[in-house]
Length: 331
Image (cartoon, rainbow, N blue to C red; front, top):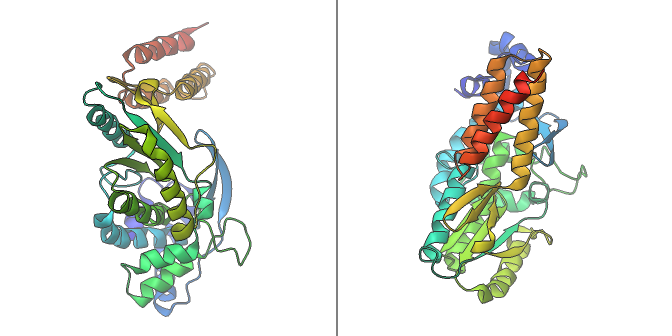
């Protein structure tokens, strides 16, 4: 049941607890609204997080988030088999660490064990979530969804949010909806298929709107970029971020998802190192002022060590552990 999936780890949150207190009544009303097509998606609560860059999150009501879970559970099984193996965002068994590992393996193949040149074209989409055209997305969903009732519900969810706030500007997906993750993959899967089957690109990875193409010939990128920009504009009504298109040689390092991939090893991005160190220092300060317990500090440390385990960072891991001990015991 979608409610059981949704409430996992959230039962102590006031809005979830309130919904559960009147669970039978709320579920019955929700079921009636969906069956009669009187259901209307509610408003969003907006707030900002740093992840590490500032992101504007839009949180739906508990009632609507239960619907999102139900929709995701059905549609994900329908669309998952259509996605390419090297799309890594918000998919079971994938994720950013797998994406980095696969890209690193690709660099070894392209460079023939680092004996030949390897170049990377790295790009991302300009304001991707804010730019998703609702009509394009609904058309792509209709390729698999033929049920009129489901189509109505998808239209209700998608039209519940516009990035510009303008009624007639039908663009944007809210960062915060579970369905937005799936919709983003459906939307960009069209691009993935174009890259793999039309442009015949062999070495390609994508995570949401961030993608990398590898080749041993730098001179093909100009033609590829023209094809990519034209497809994005005409088919998906999207455009590349003009300041985030770059060509890198492997021995200079390929920056992807917080890691730097180089021949023979993968490192953590410098900004990521600084952020981890700063956050761990803040945790130690909270411990010294009795705001948190020692176990909480060590939970944070182990989380960061897990992140570091995906790169060649043995010295950094030891350095962080030594610094943490000093910060916690400094009198």
